[in-house]
Length: 204
Image (cartoon, rainbow, N blue to C red; front, side):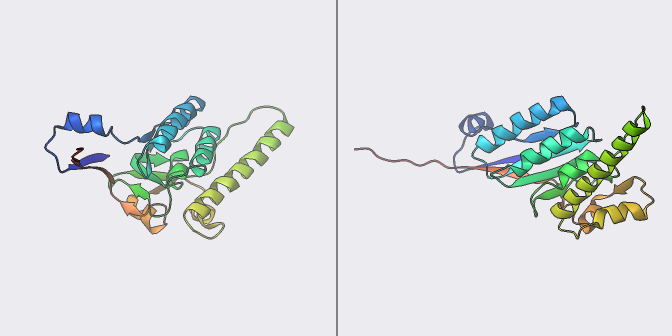
């Protein structure tokens, strides 16, 4: 993400960064239990900063559902608008998190890739355990598609129908595809501009 400094004073970049530290950006590369702690720390840093928007940059093949849901819940608790950006790839859990950006604040880099598919699981054990696991997978799938529908302002069942029509196969979306399905609102990488000014006051 490009960071711009705008000032009416002649100062070196190092001086500007001392006056106004670089914006807090949340980076997501994987979805594992240990990644949730890092996500929360970065998120809280962004919340406590003076910046008006929390940018979340996603470059991930996906990962664990529990980690994803923890991040989704953290996003929903945000007191500030959230901007999500697909950088490189936002696949599986990454696509769900991408949808959690506020409407008008979801971005895909021009050469990024996005993937949506059903929740995956492999279970070995007693028949009852396999059935219980299958029921849980159905519940999680329904929940994930519901999140996509709501975040992208689509009618219930919209995204599961899209995947169903493709034989429940992996659904790869280009940035333009994601834009057409309202998964993203812009095809570009946003910038953060830091505005600085100086004022002089005579204290007599």
